Length: 153
Image (cartoon, rainbow, N blue to C red):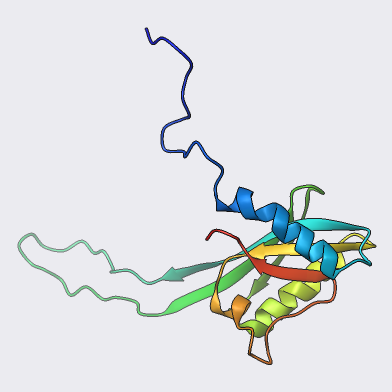
């Protein structure tokens, strides 16, 4: 039987991580940038590829003989873009044929419509190229959403 107080669960650091340390400053900075917003909503956004790739064909054949294994090289996939606001229990999702800055703009347009009236959305996302290309004229933007990479470092 163990004695004393239990320590933190295995595999977890005892101290707050970078997200917990930097998040309050990030929210305060966005609130200063958008004083017209009555409140801020935090949204988490990500995308995933869902599709099918061909496999080797399985066949019954005579023992000792090896049949030719034909592989289907076709590939079909779609991309799921999704964002959730845990505080409001709300979500937005799009199914798109490709990932690009234009697809991300379509996602932000859809998310802008889901933001509460008078609120401004803080959209936390990963550091994919179509999210952080600051010098690109096709960089996704929105008046009702501030996109920021997840502050993990």
